[in-house]
Image (cartoon, rainbow over all chains, first blue to last red; front, side):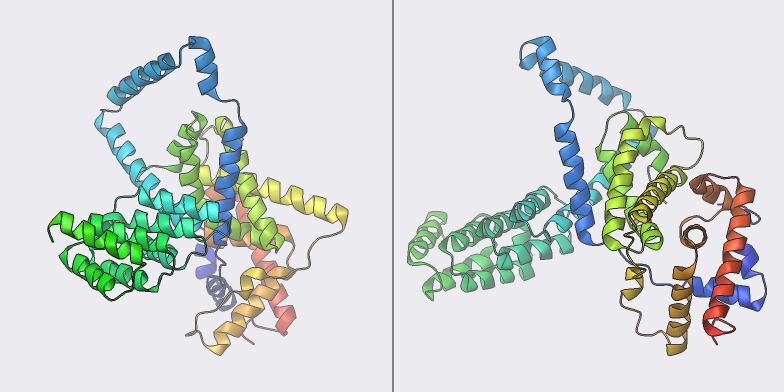
Length: 233
Length: 186
């Protein structure tokens, strides 16, 4: 914290009425948020820069000749670094950094899912799938992609990425709703697999009902019945 | 309060860990964008500048000596790049007119009409100021709590930063008065 004399604003806050008013009014100025595309553009540029740079991996391979030797060397370095990081202070730093990286990955995933490019949205979905923490915003984003994404591959990937999140009643309900709404057999198959793999008893019952109601593609009806029989439901 | 300091992160970037640059980007890109927007009055240019700044940070990370805060160093880089771009734009005589994109954002509904008017007037006055005055007010009001840190960003002494800030505030006050013929809430 700066001391009082060094702090900016003290003199204006303590100045005459006009200065005080001006300083206070400045604080009310609307501050524009950067557009979400800035984040994706920056990471794309960073990726491109990393890809264009001289790779250390091929250089190591050239030096060692055998592709496994660099890997062994890296393992050794990893062990040494790991031991060095066992110090408590360093551990705290690494822990904190991991948390920040997770937040970063989450923000990047959310941002990518808003991209115009289907490939970027797919990257966002894949990135979201790797995050294990329960995050309602991320789940909502995945559900949105699962239901509304114009690209079928992204929809299927988002359904897959929902994974065990489907056990939450609201998510499970939404997945069952999507099952009725979706016209694509491929998307329906992904939704069915999601429920068969991760759904609870209620969701399984919901799936059977949908199959019975004729909401599913005919081939999928048989698929669901066979799976339910196999599971002894 | 951040668990890992910016200064530690930039040291890791210098050692080759680019993922730490992402963390620094997440922490600072919004403020930097607003600063660039104040200077350039152009959203696209500001987006480009923010990216350029972080790429420059990556390339110059070994040059960070830790003498001041990372944030001051970051804004100093941004300042140099922004002014380079403004100079180039002036040379091409194609600078965008002051559009005030930031000011077009939606406003809090609970603000009174008088307050909205006052702030709108202030924004107009800010746009009229020379870039040097506008930037020092912006940085001093929103980004840096102390003259020492502001000085790091401006590349001058804390005493000079204080003088610039006071001078800029006087200019702003005069411009407001000129626009409204008196007090800023007249």
